Length: 177
Image (tube, rainbow, N blue to C red; front, side, top):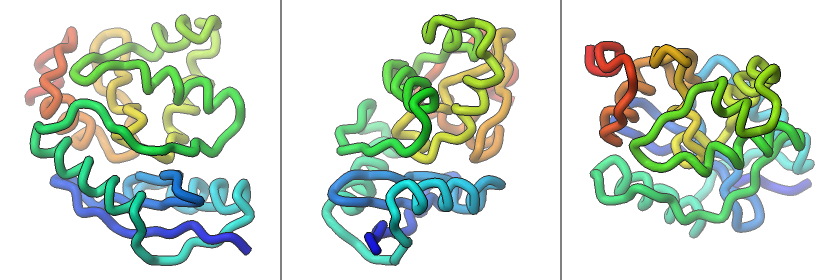
């Protein structure tokens, strides 16, 4: 059986679980999120792999780049990614990669960018299934009214990340209160 090498990363918010497979990052996710078991199961099943603790170059580089991000020294990540999900989920995640540092987009606009504004619930679900948090910036997706809705790391983590990036959103009171 194949192995996904995993390690922990202590972010200023809370711990992240990092995982690499064949020199690609497949996991950078909140260690204590509600969907932890189902996310891990999806990735292990798709790769026919099990998770083993360890360290390698990809994980070391991920930690370094996350440290730089949290120190306001990095706005873009340069890591080899392997996104594990359905074709639709991957299309959503690839759209997330197009959202620049410090910018936000609504779930509706994200759905429109994918060519189907009626797919807003499916887009939100795919956003929630993202296993490469921060690097695939699902925290940059907000409600149409500027509200900070749903985030695997919790709304307080979303606030923290958007504040770190200096994001401007319609409802500034929600962001900085």
